[in-house]
Image 1 (tube, rainbow, N blue to C red):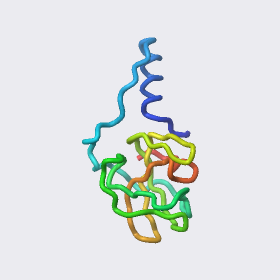
Image 2: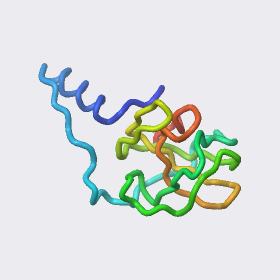
Image 3: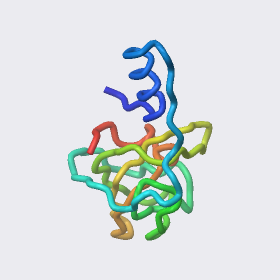
Image 4: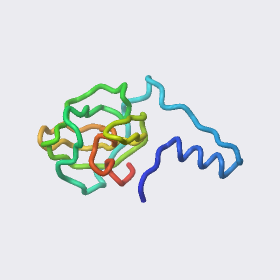
Length: 124
């Protein structure tokens, strides 16, 4: 099953239950950078669709960067979760994939708009 944005899921749930669409705002800048993850996805390869991609401590643009992924780097996807909205390469996503950049050894969260196939297909 393909993931959907957290806002679309919230709106669908609200409409289905009440007949009224309620859309919540994106995560605040003070969102926590500590999120659960586990290695449950087996996808591996050169999966960055851009260069100088931030690998962050959490699925939010306010979380610190641990390093940068490159087109030529190999990565191991672990799982995805919801986070901040990111638009890149013609895609807008609210999901982030936890991965390990096996070229550099850096592990962290990357916005799915910056990954081939829009990131991991398995939720954390």
